[in-house]
Length: 283
Ligand code: GUN
Image 1 (cartoon, rainbow, N blue to C red):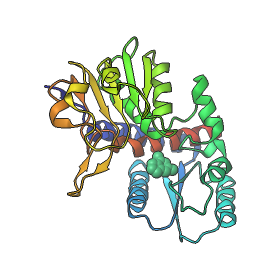
Image 2: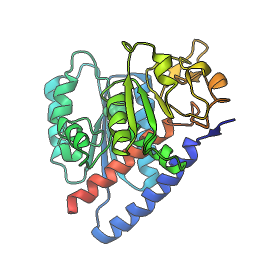
Image 3: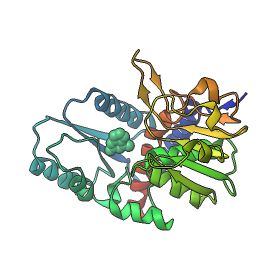
Image 4: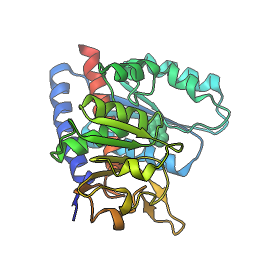
């Protein structure tokens, strides 16, 4: 029987800490951390994320602005908005919700956001800083995973860590953070030979491939820590992770549920990055 890592509870705890720190920082400096969220088009999932981000800002006492732009927004218009926010004193963090509509160049927009305000940590300057272990911001999902591990009292040093998935948003930075924590890290992907065999070596398995219920009990070592980053919608509309909870849970020592595991942490880490950005302004 695995211990269930309660992402909602850990997230609430961190948000309470951020709220307290924000109040103390505002008292000392007169600065309220400010986050701007940009969304282009009408993707319903993106709209939900944006609404949740605004709510989270209210909860921890941040100032927030959201820009909901029409699908036909041009690069020139989006760049003009990013430039305006880069120069706005009230705004410490800028997040442009991805994916953008096809006619817009995501890379150019990511590069345009000032690295000091890049609370997603997607700008090449911030990605490079993570690589050398000298960073201000960590990408929200991998940072959330590290908090779940740390606050559950799980030691990473010396452990076999297997990350499945190599995206720029999750897999690659996740591997780097586990490495910084002195894990022995293997990164797997769609071309990995005998994936199940590699997964069975893991003391800590991070599943981030976006395939519903892909990881089954036979792919997991007895006593492994299993972190499920997946967020998939089943045909019946139910939300499910990359891990087949029913067969993996009996073998794992710790496991994150979906929903209620990694998901709640992501926005919380965005709040953490925004507070860090505001603090950096006065340093
Ligand atoms: N779309 C899905 N996840 C994310 C995220 O973490 N940041 C941004 N900007 N867009 C996303």
